Amino acid sequence: MKKFAYILLIGIIIVLGFVIYSVSASDTNQDIKEKVKSEVDYFESKILYMFNSLNNIEFQNYKVSVEEISEKSKKSSENSSSAGNGDDQSGGGSSEKSSSEGGGESAGSSKEDSESSENEHKSAEKTQKFSLNAKGVLNSEKEINWDYIKKEAETLQNSICTMTLDLYKVGVNNNDILNFSKEYDNLLLALKNENREDSFKELVGVYSYFPKFIKKCDVDLQTKVLYSTKYSIFKAYSLLDSENWEEIIEYLQEASNKFEKLLTDENTQNKNQFVINKSYILINELQNSANLKDKQLFLIKYRNLLEDLNNLWYNRKQSKLNSRW
Image (cartoon, rainbow, N blue to C red):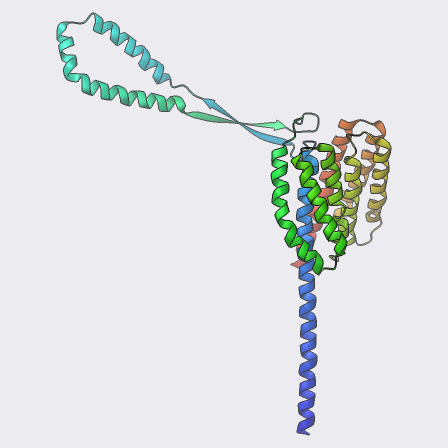
């Protein structure tokens, strides 16, 4: 009887151990997927910044500018005038005053040095004037800040090794991981040479892997559709300089078809429905601007669309955080 009890106890321990191990392994696997998802989100935001920087597109409606204004001390000019009057008076003064100057020369010199130092300090004082300047596509700067883009790309390079190791753990295809690293190297070369056309091409090449990576993280439909839709939009956006309007329109139609899945998704939360509907309308407006073949109008519509898609992404992230609590 005791032998049977021992066997039963050992069996229970083995089963419990297996259950605990399975749960622990499952939690660990889910943690890695969450980590990869965060890494891809971060990487995508930086690539998005590079895309927009090549056309100096910013999402802030206003930019704070600071202007330094030098203030010349009035006391300095007054002292100069006073010193001139003093010289005139000393020229017509008595011999008694001249004899007294020798005794007060040291003190006078010290006082003048002190006043001169104070005046120089006040002359060097500056005040700052802050102003808000409206920012938009039509009044954006024409020069590309290549140095800053290169700095961002080089900093991002340091994150690739860590993300690569995590991508292997979630089962991403080995060739996709290797080709992703090669594409990023090509991007760095294009940025180094300040080649705008090649930079757009390589940015699209790098972004093409994000929809593949994000699928391995067990994300919801909205996240998958957002990444896939953005990829099609960026393919169209990258061809803007070549003015290949027919291909641009095709890619935008592709983006519209992908995004339509969210319009009929039953799991879409009501609070996101307005932003989803608005984003869909903006995709169609972007298509209309392509039909008009106007680059500036296209960039205005593109900026508005990306801003709404980012809001949709933010709302999705916030709802995920709230559900955890």
